[in-house]
Length: 471
Image (cartoon, rainbow, N blue to C red; front, side, top):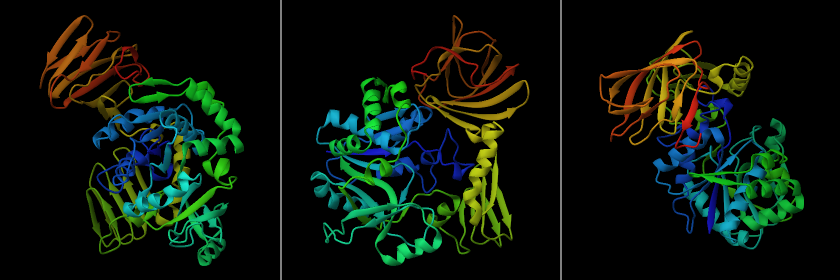
């Protein structure tokens, strides 16, 4: 059986301010109605004998990942939680161990969660062409047919002699680091090089065998991490201590560059890793002036630009070759040719310990979401939305009191020993130090305004007594 392994651990810093460390690009709908993660899973439709996907992500993204899978009808997925990032070789090792325990003949299709493929049927056909070779023990990768001399990608050089000329499958001769522009042009002109997509297909047992041969320390740490794993809701929590001791390395370095069993198939499927704002401009639908426009945007005499508005009207006049991205709490303006430098801004935000590095003003939670509306030194106003049937933890705060005003739906509120049922235009006050819980017993979303007041208003001032989400 084919087990899709979706790697969803990245942070996408070059797509700030939309992508943040706690809400990264793979969990955003950047190129359509579905998020990149949802698109990655959805393009598997049409493959035969496919199991529910294995998702590898970090702790802070787990509920958003689970919710997004639920939204597209994925039932009973396995979500493997990495305590720390250790690159792709250990992430896939965890998945291989998990799948092999269930199915000794499991075949893994390894896909990053944050890529765009315009023609998924072409990718599915490449998978089918590779399967006979993978079942014989080959470790396969997908080489993107280059459309130009790109210096931002690594390259794969194919062997001159094909193992399957009908499908264009070749042994891998070498993996090559990102080249300079003249070298990249030579690669493209030769016809023997592909862009390294970071997508792979191999039997789980063969990957583990090759990892044992070429990177045994990685496999030993991952075996120990899985031996100490615990299941929690949809999540598999590997043993943190064992995994933290694991060396960090990519699949390329740990296995694919060293094995004698690597093969590559050319892929011409409209692939893009959307690693920058200019990449999103390239894959976007353009108007008559070569602009890509998202959201509430008005233009006059604007050309060759990417303009994205999330929360208000964005207007531009007389500009060319710009990226302008607006969110509720930040605005980015950059020349298209300089968008790779957005990471420098994110680095500055991190050095200044600013919240814009990690969070949007609207923050997803397993029970719904909240959005900060106003904030000063001793008060904060939030809009809270609770999904039908969901509830917040039973909790208390040491440093703040809260006033809740219901604006839509029905709330069941536990306040100390008291239980209240409140509906629209009703309110209650939660004094500092009093245990409380908010629940939505209704069939429609519950919306309320929360006014916090106190000496400290940080999200870490929460003492949880009970929580259905295991936090």
